[in-house]
Image 1: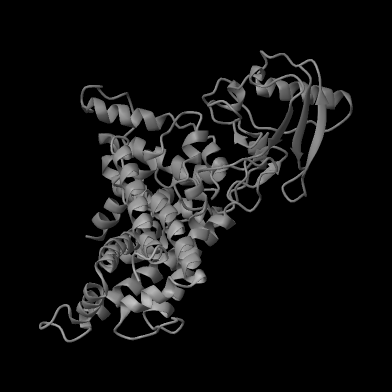
Image 2: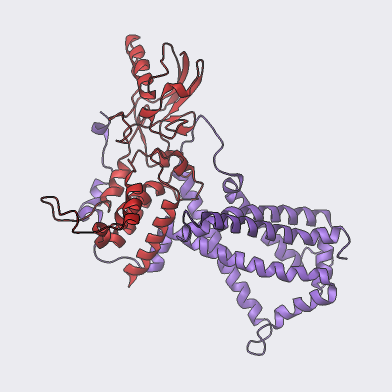
Amino acid sequence: MALATRTDKRADRKAGDPGGGRPGKRPSVLGTLWGSTVGKKAVMAVSGLVLLGYLVAHLLGNLKIFFGPGEFNEYGHWLRTMGEPVLHYEWALWIVRVGLLAAVILHGVCAYQLSRRDIAARPTSYVHKRRRASYATRTMRWGGIILALFIVWHLLDLTTLTVNENAQPGHPYENVVATFSTWYGNVIYITAMLALGMHIRHGFWSAAQTLGMGSATRDRVLKITANGLALVLTVGFISLPVGVMTGLVS
Amino acid sequence: MRLTLRVWRQSAADATGAMVTYDIDGISEDMSFLEMLDSLNEQLILEGDDPVAFDHDCREGICGACGVVINGDAHGPERTTTCQLHMRHFSDGDTIDVEPWRAGAFPVVKDLVVDRSAFDRIIGAGGYISAPTGSAPEAHATPVPKADADFAFEHAECIGCGACVAACPNGSAMLFTSAKVNHLNVLPQGAPERETRVLDMVATMDEEGFGGCTLTGECATACPKGIPLPSITAMNKEWLRATRKVAR
């Protein structure tokens, strides 16, 4: 009954394509990656893992704030001189910045394009609603937008010092204390770090699946690692505003 | 049992549909969900109404033809096909919402019937092996390790019902495609086309307008045959491997 009404809408396009196979020229590896949902997800996974790696290093550096202005500011200065004398002053820092920018752009563009596609693939929603998937999974897109906005604010606040209350170049310790001495600085930062934790919780595990590294036996280890990373990074970063608020850092 | 059904009615593919409420009495808890719909249709025919169109065939859970979304769940509250879901899982006086699979790649044909021919085209792109036909080959000529045979069989259980697509918030066909790819790619018979199979089937899946995977796990929860979520991971691995290999 239903079969009779079915039409092959792509019959004309598929003509001359034996058995759906694509003989002859295939696009390059990058072309295949960018042109496929699976490939774009792999780009997202790799760029996400690069950013996650950076965050671990960033947290370790940030924690030096608990050892006083001398040590923290010295670390801030070292970031500019690292790589010397092989590299010129600030070159290593700029290489890292360009790499991070590329990762953020790739991650964001893929997320945008895949999300557009996903939303279009489900044009009609169900009348009978029910809760689907975990909170961390459902909030990946909004969480990503929150994090993107946070990065803009964070750079304006502590890199360019445009919106910083203290805005003393070369004195990152004093600038950080100034940020966390304002109520909005704490609210923005803590909200973003909670979003970060959720994003990593689903994102790390998801990246492992996308890159084909998960399996039924490895699933537990991956989930524990994802939750562990999310918890350590969130608690670690939030310890800074809490440190300033409690007067531990001043 | 006395039930209130709210069923999606849509007279044709291009018509606007709506949920229509029906009261039905005398439903036995031993009836399958489809038999309950049969009873509703008998009632509708007697009243001179148009019966509800729904897909069905074997009614023993192996063909994959039937499938509707019951109270928001593909195939309803139990992990089985709609034909194998029995009314004992509902209570007297319940209101049950019945909707068709919802996905851009599965347009509604009529009422609860959707066009799943996109799946056929994914299969056509590589869900087969090329082998000389004739008499059955000697079973011991091509040894298959037990673990591989089990893996292939687990994925061969997919009946192509489309519940994974219906349950996925992105309308993605990754679980279906991965079941088909993994089933053949692990076996020696599928080895000659191992790379082209995964690349072409994924490309066709994308062309058909299915969404991407965000690993929500809804598909594997809905699958009446228990195709596991790591199936998608295994296909991602195959796809990345094939991309590297074909480029050489």
